[in-house]
Amino acid sequence: MQIGDLSRQAGVNIETIRYYERIGVLPKPARQSNGRRTYSTVDTERLGFIRHARDLGFDLPSVRVLLALQEQPEASCEDASRIAQGQLEEVERRIARLLSLRDELARMVGECHQGRVSECRVIEALSVS
Image (cartoon, rainbow, N blue to C red; front, side, top):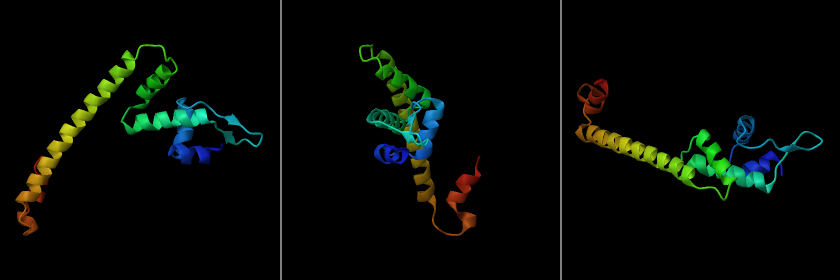
């Protein structure tokens, strides 16, 4: 299959696929005689793995490690578990931050009486550093 087909099947932008090839997360594809890239179902599966990991917020160094671990099915999954635990902790920190932001925004909106800007609680709250 060609890069456009891979892009559609995996739900990943063509430029992202090329980027993953450049940084070595996705192997360089075979080339046809006309220079076009040719991909296999293995590439589709690997790209799907990468996309899913990225959707879960894993950074590219972690994705590299997870891909390497995937190549060793008999190895311990301790490293994979440690990486996932770290990502879970990061997600929980972000959720806590977002909840705090939500509370502050709700307070600002709740205190705004929709009068004049000179009396606007939203503008006042944003002006405080």
